[in-house]
Length: 286
Image (cartoon, rainbow, N blue to C red; front, side):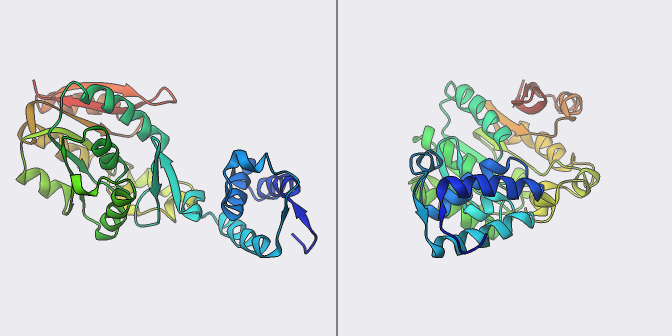
């Protein structure tokens, strides 16, 4: 990128080619997001301003963002924000970036929970707070507890709750979720996206995930089942008789989850994600 005068259309084409050569997947999409961020325009607005020139100041800013991206830093960390189920969620390296698979789980949670009329809700391992915030939005009568062992993640979750105007309906608790399970009961709805990636799988993750997102949110440093085992073991105590828990898990874990639920005398309904893979489970007491 030299000191020539650049128009938006030219930059989009150049950036797509350059990022593609650097090995970035979906280079056009990445360039649209980065240029839109610099120009303070939505992606669709870029296409309505093809002939607009980009100032040298904006070019310098864009170049810095592009350099960060090719080092493997996740796009959403660079942008500082992502969208989750229509919510604007601030993201940073203190918490895992929300995934589309988790959005699919929350589609089902919202459908199923509408029949529960939940009064007490817990999000275990809240991270950015996106799950808890979404539930607080949809069930204004409920009290929502967001639990995480990381104070930095909880600080981010609090900020996101304030941004989405639900902080007064929520309580943030810095605690190990396994300890929390031992001390609480009477919940109508529980959601959790615990660390379920095995250490072997973690070591084979792309550097954009492994080297940038919080390790403790991804892996249990073992076979990926330890948190899920403990959560399942606590469900008969923590859930109300008519309550339900929704847990995300690794795509190869479906049969194991079904067996583990049965061993704990729980009813389990497994759902597939957008790719047709086993991804989350609804747990209820018999």
